[in-house]
Length: 370
Picture 1: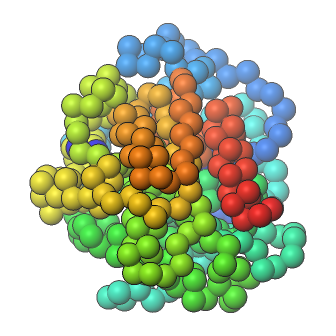
Picture 2: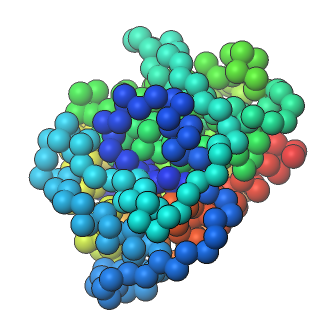
């Protein structure tokens, strides 16, 4: 089947999901997106791997660093152990340190807040532009991690980048994970958080009439589900959605699933492990809330789908794009060559990530009338 992996990376990167003790102020400083660093020539130490022969050099440097950090295969661990493993964010940060790549001062402030949701509360991190005039447009953002690992810290760079480049408030949503809380817990909380943003936009300097959703990997699936639930419950549908290599099908024999079965940082065994831990059963993967290509997609908001070439989820992302177009949804699909799953947050070191973030920002700004 297919599910998302761990999010990632400064300027876009994934990090250990156990960094919850990091303060909001520290995250604000550490995860600001790199915009115009001096050019650093990153060169891999070995030839490209068999599973990614045309991998871009900067991407390969990150993967080499990740593989050198001694992490154990996720699929051999229990969820708690998996959440402690080195992540692509850790690798990106190490590459930045080794090559003296520094991030500029953050252009957005961050604050944490617990909000009410079904059955209790969840935590959100709110990114607010330091300049500009409120109320700002608002983006509700959902991180990746296969609905099992990762957290707001792991994906902070992506949320920070969206805030800075779009000039919008970004509300990054934490949600329950399996195996402790299995599907549909994450989906329910994600929609509850979206409704909270609509009702409380004024209190966070946001304009609820200008709202969008963005998600990466498993979070891409959540973002799409939020749009569908808003449509079905007749509340305000997002003006736009950006789905970055979303979980969208359950076909482990798809073209990209077969071709990139051994890829890093996401591979077939990991995907099967995510399904086992996140869903009540393997059969649940056919549910249209998981396998989006089976869902009713009519009435969805205009959509941008961003794909990575070296990614088991590549095929289903393109299939979802085709299904959306068939449902008369305005849809753009952009595949980035030579990069892996989780590249989006790596703008500090991977040029394609910087390009992908700029594309997403441009589409969102247009939807907001900016």
